[in-house]
Image 1: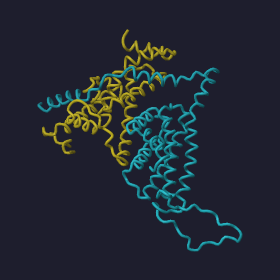
Image 2 (image 1 turned 90 degrees about the horizontal axis):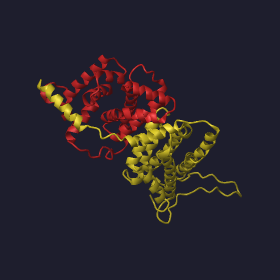
Image 3 (image 1 turned 45 degrees about the vertical axis):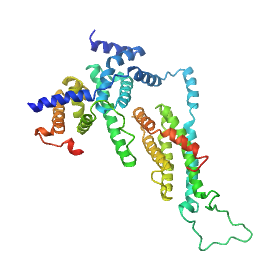
Image 4 (image 1 turned 45 degrees about the horizontal axis):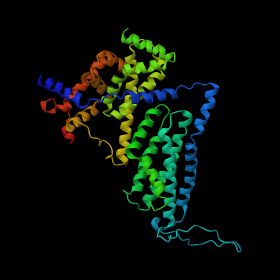
Length: 239
Length: 190
């Protein structure tokens, strides 16, 4: 009996301790009304024409996709170059092949130390990181306001997945070079990796809910702002 | 006009394209949906998202509501589906984040009240099966009837009652370990 009474008292306290705040009716309604308006496509000739500029006014997916493709080449090239400095010594050919007479030997980029002490590998890594952050900025900024319209959202997981590959390449390269585990650059890459994992897992079925989740996470971690700062900072100083 | 009749009238108007009727139907039900989402997630911001999602989905498939039961029950089934889905995703994301990064940025918002008790309560509620938790939250915290809970869960009333009973038994064993019922204690979790 005592136990029942004590449990009832506890439930009462539970009711108070976990009491929801006042319902934010207007704020929620604004979003619901906006979502409903999006879902009411009235296909008249006028609206069909009017809808085209909206799509064309959102070229950020295409920009991001193109940049990802460039980045793949950049990072891949960086990883295939001879390693030196932070990435270890460059390999030396034991049996160099002689070039045919009269033809100059092909020029191979050497990882020579730059005047400021940084190697070509360091510079390549930084260039790839700056480029990745620039494109991630475009992708994530667009993602923050994108709707779940299939024409707009359908290609996004694929692009995020491509960018995820680049992020992991950079994380791997940084690890190989002995980068500090808690450096701001590495932390940002990890945050970006998390966000891209989430975006690449988006499905049409739960798009609205998932995007809200992802946006909330980005907001909490200030991901876009940090990515943007790093992209700008990386053009003027070592990251 | 009864509440059920009023709902049906609004639904008829919504299906005929009356946007104002959407707002009326929303106003009539939003409080309970939001409160339920809050209680189930413990996160008002997430509850907002889930409430919005519930109404957007419900309005989008309002044509599927056949009117063979109260609209509130049908709406709560939509809400339950949305909330359960969010809880599953949150579990996956938290697991991923625990594996990859510092979680210190999460759960740092201060809330009023007794943080120790709230922490114990939230831990205990988290340990319940989602269906059991829903039954407990709806009945004991939000005052729904067994009939309403059964409609929201799309189960017989007996099943809803059984889930509530299991939830209470489990909570007693978790939160009142000192009174001799045995079972796992939250205090032992540190």
